[in-house]
Length: 380
Image 1: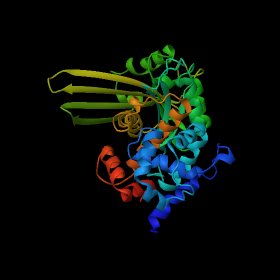
Image 2: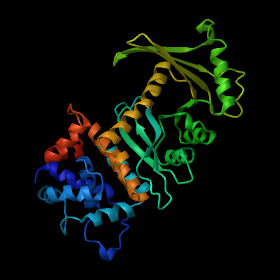
Image 3: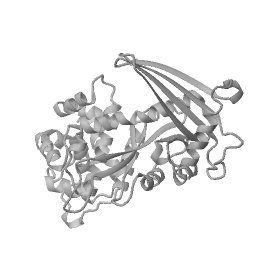
Image 4: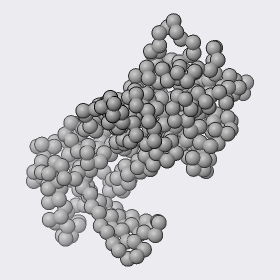
């Protein structure tokens, strides 16, 4: 057996600490084998236990060569039962160990950018059980394209309560966490600082007092000499899709008279971004955004954090178009949560492969070529 195939079997070691939820008497298949089969199936385009099992049947010879499989392949129902029984938080910790061992940080000299955002699995609702579509809040290392963790929000909850839970499950030390306006909450800011991380949080209409304070700090003096305001400034110019985007980013320490200083003691700097877009037909639009920061960043780093955060939308697009997440009709909540995580982890593995191809193309290669699938799994 070649060395790279042995490495596939060694993946099971990341799941040795995971408590097996199955009754000991009924265990026919190794837990690690079932999980590796599920990961491989998702990488090849499977959307659930039935499709994963169908893929495994057609790759039985290859799987027999790289996994133990003491009692052959698990059934469709066996795969489904495992993915329903596994607790998502413990399940994800094993993948975090896999990611850390396989994909080291790209730049250890700078703080890691972590984007936190929500996405709803649109067709996962169950009217008979009174369940709406399953909302997922996830965290991504934007520069590396790595999924760090996710939390499914409760039926009567929302992103505001899920984000602190997610933040507490990942390592925030030496990182900059970016969150859109829904995460502009005191508890979230406090959680990030307590985890030894920094934050860049967007501010819109809520809370209104904070939004007004930010607008006053910038707009009332925007016509004055920028040096007098002690701004940091960074500008970019991009041309794509028949549109020219000119962006400007400003960062400054909070003013002495900043009215929310006591209510938001973690906020030490404020940021402002403006985008002016010119369409090919000559029309022009302007978009502005405000941000709160717990420390003053260089304006270039601030711009990287802001632009990197919106890059998470491309991950959502991949999940919907390539993995058909929005089309999934999985109604069982834990199963849906774990399948959603497997898709995000699959995006991570594909993103880290060096081949120049679309992720859909990479998935086709995984389906057709076991050697390429091995490379994706082992990070080789």
